[in-house]
Amino acid sequence: MKSIIYKLILLISIMIIFLQISSTHYFSQEYHVEALYMIHIHEDGVVETIVLQNVSRGVNQIILPTKPLLFTLEAKLDDKILPTLYDDVNNTLLIIAYSDGVAHINYLTEAFSKNNMFIINISRPIIFNLTIDPGVILMIDPAYIISSESYPNGTLKLIVKGPISLEYSIRALRTSTMSTTVYTTSPESITAISPRQPVYLREILMITAVVIAILIIIFMIYVRRGRKSFEAEYLDKIDLAIINLLDKKGGSAFQSEIQKELLLPKTTLWRHIRRLERLGYIKIEKIGQINKLILVKRPRS
Image (cartoon, rainbow, N blue to C red; front, side, top):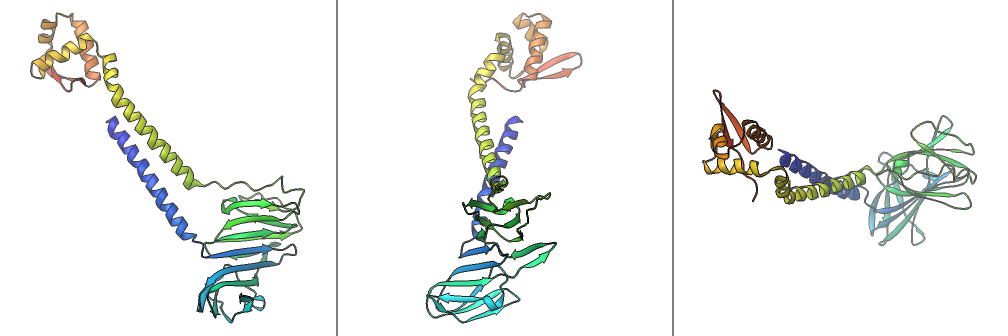
């Protein structure tokens, strides 16, 4: 029974590892880097978005990470302005490129205000660079932050994964009682509320599953190798004599027969019989007032 449980636990651990590998592959596909996205929140609250996108000659459709202010939208290739057509419904940009290359798309981002906070939405599952100027207070869940770096002038640079809604305010220090963490680039507070490293549940589960699987394998090897010494420790000469006698008699015998041949007191014999029963070597079958002993298994040689 125990071996079945160990095998089930081992199987579950292997399944967890497989799922983690699969989810990691899915994650890498989901956040496939097809372009470079940069978002910059300036100290006056203006948000600038830059997209560096590979384009081919002809018409290219590009999904923008944020909502642009159309009068600021500009696309260039080799310092030449490209014709563009913006689709407001799908937040996509059609670019006509005259050659293959990297298009430079630049625009100011549309932000809306709520409860004295500015909000911008990144609707795509992308990874982007976020630059925060001094005096800007950003509200963000640490789970979305991949890495962060602060500079002596108070600028904070983050690598963030979307989709996400970014909330920020200007020149007003706040504290948060919610699950989000306040990030500010003001020099006097940047060390006090520096961003925490995100907890990656997937990696923790995978490491845990690997450790459990290794421990189970080691334990099973130890049990198999140590079973002989385990039995030798718990089976004394009388126990082995009872088992050998039952084996000679075809696997079963009455308790009275064993007692006569081994010349043991009833209490001594009964104590050993009960121990062999607990260890799973024999089974006691009642036939009226007489005990019949049946050999279930033999010690490993």
